[in-house]
Length: 471
Image 1 (cartoon, rainbow, N blue to C red):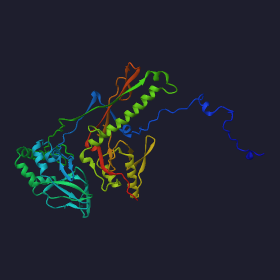
Image 2 (image 1 turned 180 degrees about the horizontal axis):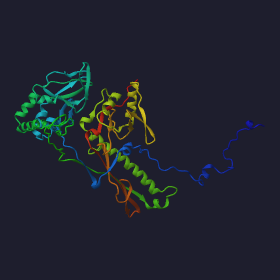
Image 3 (image 1 turned 90 degrees about the vertical axis):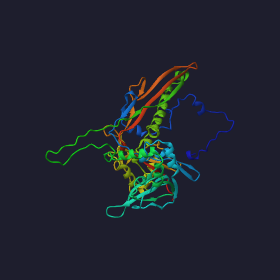
Image 4 (image 1 turned 45 degrees about the horizontal axis):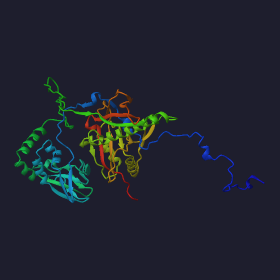
């Protein structure tokens, strides 16, 4: 009989067992185990790429040259059904009203704002037309276009929720629109006419005084960045009298205080004493706790309202995509607003949308080597994933671009090393004792913040559409 013809043997129910079962054998076998795994762990590129600066004393002061900031903020609104109203105090974000705090006057101005709903494709203002009112965009996206030097239409900017245009119309009776504004989507805006503003101003001495003070500030000599000008002379010959000057500083520079992320790790002494082979239970518990703290640290560096990057980008460094999804032109617009951009940060889904936008244009991102890892890049600047950047319910997100380092006047991370019971740089683990239930307690703390040394060091492309279009 050949091997192939041997009939298959089957165990007959109730038959006597002839060998040790695998289930029983496993009771004597050594099991190979993995260390505890954790899905929350990410690449944390932001923590790896930020240059970390010591903040002794728990704070870091950013001294800058004096800037005459006249206001360029975003305006917020409230909605009641189909009715939209501007929040009165939000009018203080306008350059003309920056620092004005008379709530009754701001309320009077807000009450005179008129709502206007617009449809996609509608022309809101024409270039060269008389400008007699300011427009506040409550919702929607509009594009500003003009005529180039050699004819033909050129794109100026894309504006969205919270932006405004036509502010010079409130004081200048001869003001003209320098661009055509066209709605790219349907939306709503509020308008305040010059006549209504003048009527409120005539009955409010505080507003009148504020407007006069604004006029005197706007006449101060300053450079294109809003800094107080340094008087210089160039191209002269002979014994020309040279101008005297000095460099003025901000009198109230911003200070960044270190924030903290903490937790109390508890481990029963019985576990720590008896169950430490082959892996040390205390070390594994601490390792995973530190990973969670580092993830929270990166989340705070992106989203914290005090020092987070998304909330500290200067309004002049915030742009909108031209059509919704990110395109190579949009990435160039974000890149060209600063010198020496070190990196882009985007949610992984946003990076996928960038790839689709490039493919639609017949382009493909190149790759650069970063610490031995190949990552996608645009114009040689790496595009790094960060899942801490939020995605809205409308499937929009943001792309962050930054210059880094103190020597480059960029974005820096702040921490303090040399802490008592320091376990890692800027992170300490302190033993807090054993309670009456025989539980060890450890206080795990990490201190951190981030500082933007100059406004142009950090830029954000907002409202980037990341959902793919149906085929």
